[in-house]
Picture 1 (cartoon, rainbow, N blue to C red):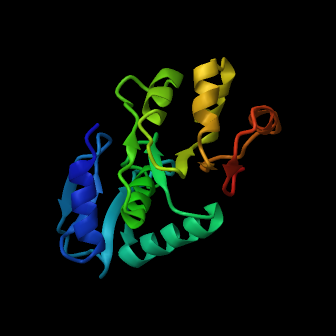
Picture 2: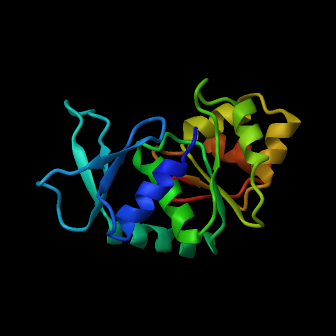
Length: 189
């Protein structure tokens, strides 16, 4: 997945130099030119539709910046992110926004074949910054630790922070992560 166009469009939207954007699952940005957008909207993300029809959620540039600053404080610094989530969801979009705020190029996992330990490990090898971060949901972490290879564990240990969200982390998964000395953080860790 090439996220360069998404980063360019997001950068312009965050700075107020371009229209708000909505990213598709492949990271392709689409300009959002609706007259109904709130002032300062930088990105639009669709909800999952769990209550019926997916709804467009407007995310303001200042709210995205505040979230990035809060994450930096929580993690203890800025660094290079690994995008392992679809960029059309808030967590994936935030990886791109945080990368822009940090001035780093994110490593991008190939999600074309689904989330696999092999693809995650290969993407983690692209990271070059001294401070490495990724954002995962517990299901992804479970898949990585279900039948861990030495390469996958080594890749996970290279992260200074693994930001978890989206669902509660089970005690069993927390224990498995601790057994491998993984640095989990976030509201679900």
